[in-house]
Amino acid sequence: MNILVIGSGGREYSIGLALRKDKNVKKIYFNPGNGKSDEIGININIKKYEEMADFVQNNNIDLTIVGPEVPLSEGIVDIFQKIGLAIFGPSKNAARLEGSKVFMKNFLKKYNIPTAKYIETSETCKANDFIDKLNTPIVVKADGLCAGKGVIIASTKKEAKEASLHMLNGESFGDAGKKIIIEEFLNGYELSVFAICDGENYKILPAAQDHKRLLDGDKGPNTGGMGAYAPTPLINQELYKKIEQRIVEPTLKGMKEMGSAYQGVLFMGIMVVDNEPMVLEYNVRFGDPECEVLMPLLKTPASELFYKAATNKLNELNIEFYDKYAVAVVMASENYPYKSSKPSEIIIDTIIDENIKNNTHISYAGVSKIDEKLFATGGRVLLCVGIGNNIKNARELAYGLCGQVHFAGKQFRKDIAYQALKALA
Image (cartoon, rainbow, N blue to C red; front, side):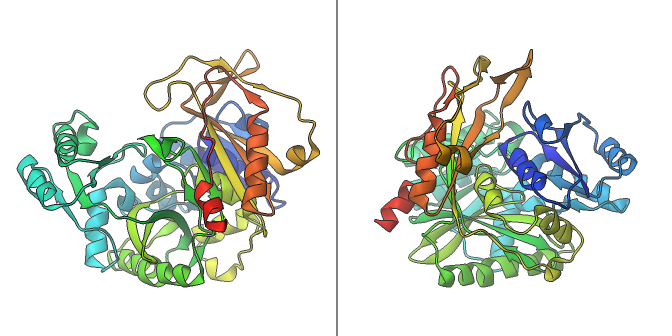
């Protein structure tokens, strides 16, 4: 099987690693890939979706896997499916679950899926009136895609009103913020739950937990994610069952009723409040950095999982996972997430410790090759991933690898998986 992976980040690199060890896979292509993905596949650079489809046909590619949300929201799946190409991801209409937070919240309301109280508005006065009725903190969300940064958790009503104003007047997120969601803050703990879907059937992956804030102790600004671990001890079979029955199944049923049967990965940002799951948001692709901890745990060949989902055959698959734990720590550039940083050469020490050597790996993201040397050129540069028999062991391995990686201005959180360790204590 020949496979094309669309995207350039750690998520796509991790999918590539899973495919590389898959005996069913002959060739892996990345579009556009990054400075390291060319070591596990072939990087190409095609921007137009129709031209990508031509490349797939001309190179006997059996499956395309779409990593980022933007191509999905722009309809790449529709273009490929129209000419009979197998592609993993939702249609343009189904991708509105992420592409429009207004659509998503109204969908939740229509199908009685648990979520926070909210309003949608494009009017400052209406926003301010609703803010005055809520307790703090208050959540303000831009409607459109903002690369994971369109959510403000305001600690005061004044801050919430300012955030709403800056979104609505286009200052914060341009057209993506011209319509906003304001909702109550849910007090609980957050989980990332993923369902692989084929329109009718689904397979639940082990629940993960992301760490969105830049600094230790969940302080500082929101980022695209500073680390993750899976599986989490903060979930049990009862909670999985509630998520399936109250969220996954009505979502698939609702999307089918609307004429947009959902295929691909459904990423549910869940807030657990008093052991009850509430939907914070949907994403229509793998989370990053969650993908980096889920792929190493997948025992079932990755090509089978993605291909059967793309061809409506998930019911034929018995999905299996290794009885292990994975922790990923993001190493980010000096000025992330505020502004870009100067390119910095990445130096990796020779690893002597056998445990680190055999049970860790790096998932590369914002990296480029310059004169055959590897440089940090993106915000989130790479992820150090540890695989262990328990969370503590996996975490120690991941941080052990962090100590072997060097570039000017590197920054990373020192407390990834702290909630899990606290729960297990």
